[in-house]
Length: 359
Image (cartoon, helix red, strand yellow):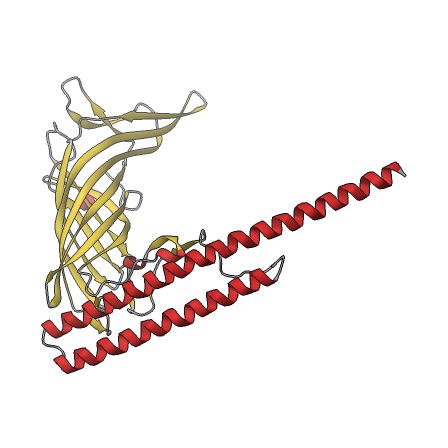
């Protein structure tokens, strides 16, 4: 009997805690919804302000008449006033639902702590635009700007790598064509140069470049006491002989090509989505590290050696360009600075591959 009594007391305790928790949870949701009503009013007022500014911009540019501007402003004012009315009515209904029920086991839209992740193609602008990238509270989405002259995007490039050696053709290069490669990863900003035309864009950013040379004929790099670097034959057969440099650079390009102008009541954009483009420019930066890796077998054992920080030039700079359709193109870069500081014959890194821009 004592056990049954204790069990009943425990069950009653759990039910009481659950009801209290549900009541407290409802009260929290109601407070959140009341706060959301303030946010809704602020959001709609901000959007109305953006729309009016866009209309005034078109009026100043002579695109619409004073009468047309007044009509559009009235339409926007009515639209956002109705938006506030409708959205507040939804919130009031949710509050009434929570007040009427002790426990609601479905979403009432009261969660202001939720986060929104938005990235990629803006469905209204027909443009893969990183300006639509947003991570944060759902109710704090940034309002759309009427004219955004600067956009940003991820840059990734990959392809073949080799070296132009003074007095020697690429066919006689000591580096394998297939095994030598490069990778570039960075972030770029693109700014429209002219106010009313997108024919010329200025593209700039920051990138990491990894340039790898796969050395042939059992050769490897050797640095003597005076800092001179040369290729010499290794003492045993080498399975792999690779040399890699890591650079941090600032690329700068002037980009040319057609674009599509997309106009809406409260904003306009220039889109290069599925358009031909040409980029010409260069880059400059620092060599962060140089490393050689050797793999070979000696005395029946597999060995792996790594040698770091050869006498490479600390400062790197060069020319680069791309020929693209939309976000994919052919990319070429050439180091004007020789790879090594002290070398009898200069050799300059050259790369050719595919470039992906998320713009």
